Image (cartoon, rainbow, N blue to C red; front, side):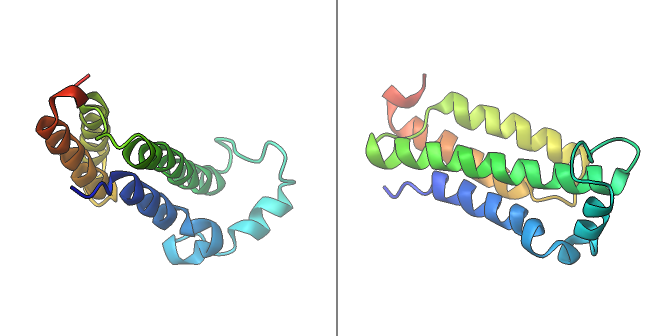
Length: 128
C-alpha cells in the first residue's frame, strides 16, 4: 500500500502557501507594500482586515506542511499507517472548515482524512 497522506498534506499546504509568492492570485495584490507601509512589526491586527486575512491564509498552509512532514516520517520511516484518531481529527477539522465556507480547500483535507481512516482500518494496530 502506498502511503501518500503526508505528501498530500504537504502539497495542500504548499498550494495554500503560494499566496506568499503570488499574493495577487488569491486576491491580495500589493499586500507586501501594504505590510511594509505599516512597519512589519505587529502589523497583523483587527484594524487592517486585509493584512489579517492574508496572514491567516498563510498560517494553515504552513501548519499543513508541518503536519505533512510528520505524517510522511511516520508513514515512511516507521512503515506504519497513520493512527485513526489523526484521521478522525482531520475529518472534524475539515468538516468544520467546509461548514463555514463551502468554497474551500478543506475538501482536499477531507479526502486525506478519509484515506487515513480507511488505511488505519486495514491495519488494526493503527487505531490508537
